[in-house]
Image (cartoon, rainbow, N blue to C red):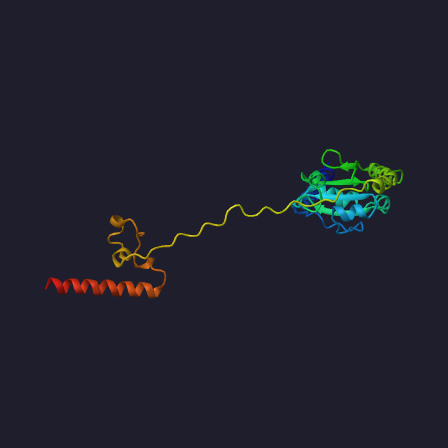
Length: 244
């Protein structure tokens, strides 16, 4: 009985430790670093001009992006998936990318997405939040993604017809929206008028209202402070002489 309890406790500790490791991995994961496919740094127009079906991987560039982690750690490393996308133009962009039409990049705005396109800019399949492919084990107990492979094969077939359509009617060039200019220039800081000696000493600021009340330490430099003190002493001395 005691041995059984010890074994149970050991299993519980291992499971808890594994859960903590997985949670930490998800929390610290940063998307966009996948190197399983031959990713190309192409904009929308360049990708269309290549004439191949397109695999667009869009990800929200945030730490702990679990959808992007699933794509990069589970789907893309799969050997069958990599083979299925061999004939594609593969491009990965963040969801803030401006060189692709918003209609495409917004598909990954809430995490991440794999978008399969034909060369006429038509969407063939989207794997995103709520529609991610299921992992299935084959007879050899190897995890596969048959939905992804089938979608890739379908996009390749559709692209044959799309190439003919593009010859007749080319895809319009995409022009990114201009970066909005600053609507208003930064307002200049108000010029601070120098206060009189009494103002620096804080003797009549409340009456004037034009100078902010400070002590001598309110002067901008130590030299200003010393000069203010000297001027104040001289003024007091002159006042005393006049009284005499």
